[in-house]
Length: 183
Image: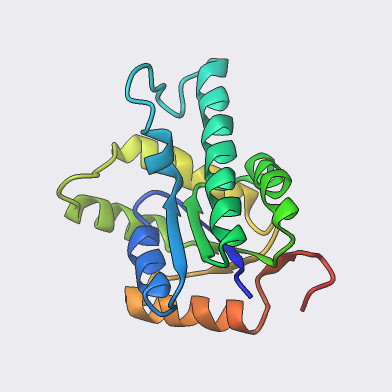
């Protein structure tokens, strides 16, 4: 049966690479990048840390759209990996959107060290982010810490090793957050 994996991370944590490596291991998996969903709005896109209601409104819309895509794939028996920066409030939004699919939902946070994220960010050619923004988001994700699911410290792992660990956690059901009685 198809399942949903929410893969959370700080910027430059390797989530896109790991999500791709994990998705390639299965016959029927859709990889939804919530940032790409967010960027479908090409005019008026608000910077995520701007101090007004617009970024939160746009984030909510991206979660609703990612959730709708996921439900459509699940209805066609296609597993789903959603990657996003998921904090407690957005996890609740995701659960509201995804639980109607009535499949197991996994939640895993990739948490390499901040130094590792900065090193990965410096190696990027195209999607490099401002170091101050990376610091801010990393602190928010780290502050939320163990609010649900499981975390993988991928600081000293290759993307392949991280994908192996992620697959083991999901296969054993250790990362299931819904239904709460699943194991």
